[in-house]
Length: 263
Image (tube, rainbow, N blue to C red; front, side, top):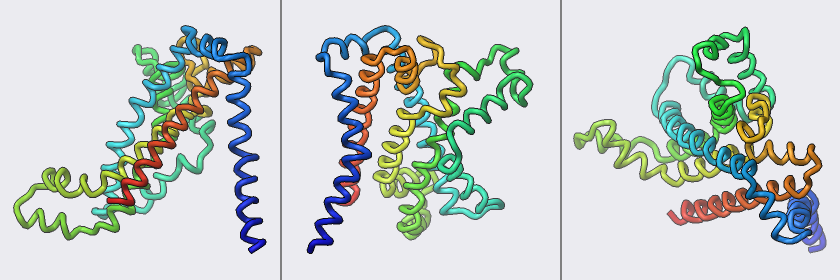
């Protein structure tokens, strides 16, 4: 009995120390002078630009990774092709690789002297612009939809799809009427995880963006920039906004998980 309570209090204490107290302190610092200064800090033109740029990058990266993730998951589970094992391993590379290394790789690839550095001379600007930030975000958030859909596809098997094919359905009809409804909760959960990763990305985006205020500054970059300029109210207010976005994502994850279990 005693060991059970020790385990519970130990787990709760650990969560308090590493999660709840730091996040609570961010909100306290953001609103210690009242709601007005915090509101003014997150409604400046620079802060609004950073917010909408963060949303824009997520709005591009999440659908791209969703489409790619579903297609790749089906390819990995339903088909065998040369290099299957290598592709399956490479999917997890963004989880093991430091985001800063990802940003550096993109900088070397698209920078001056890089393999694709000549694109800038033709008017296609990747580095220190939104396209480079989108590419970095897509890379670091790539695995989540794939890893959520793959086990569901394996558990489902192919009986229903084979039955649909026997009844005359083509591959596209089978996907829309059989496969997609069966994996919709896994896709939704993967989308939520991808969104969370895209909204909170810092390392890779920091390298390829140049951190130009009002141009290539996302909310995560703005937190650091404001802190380095000793604008603590602006830094904490932007952090609180990011935390609220994270809470919204967490609520969506919880709701989807409950519906998936019910289904």
